Image (tube, rainbow, N blue to C red):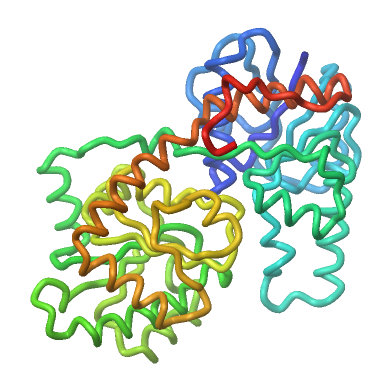
Length: 390
């Protein structure tokens, strides 16, 4: 087969992680099919050296309506592509071959951008529905996402396959040298214990309640010799882009204890994971939720929400709380900080949980989906290669 994959979002948080790990693992397992990677030279070089059956189908850096809906389909037809894989919900209007789409979540529909009009929300719904209906097969990254697709679009269940994400290979456990760890912590002036959040900063991530819960926790730890100076570190977009969080910090009286660092390099984030006291991820909705797995892989106990895909992905390896309840979030964080036996248990279970997911298995299943899409048959996954999450 000749398979095209849209890699133009490889530099984006979340989707980019998916693209990078999927392509690198397709490289390892599939030398039989030919792959055309749609993107600019910058996108293509992001992947590093690839074998001879992986080639670039060049597209400019700048995405345009004409390029998305005319140039790409014409290139697919001209190059005789059998299957086109779009690893997100924004596919061209017309695709001259079999289309496989990966749906990471339905957050854009369940939590539309603030200020969106009814027309904009409905337009977004219609565009996503068209992509889902047009696809020969849909890859959902969790059972929770599959359920959302069925509930929202009434999609035929047989058309959707759950293929779990896994730990980003760039976050594979590695212990930084003591000097590097000290250097990173000194550079960011992290001298006190800290709670860590890492991920996008969006309203559904529920960070305003995390900040409020942290303020409650601070009052309860005021006499605690170990944690009375604890900080909350938020890795993500710059605070200047999210004024409502700045107001929450000030209103909660923790402006000296909450710090926003923006995005940091993988090597720096690994030091944060290995130095924090706990990882807090009280999101209102997740299609999968990679950051908690990254934390677990680095020996950090996790607090997360008991909603959407997080109980499915994390199981009993995290303390799960109701994300709308500030006091429950605060109690969960205090429990992890104060109960050493629980901390050890969470760390052990976290390592075991991470091992249940494999990008190699995910890539094998995606290849089977390509084959079934090309032949218009239902994919049958090889049981011996499945993960324990099935």
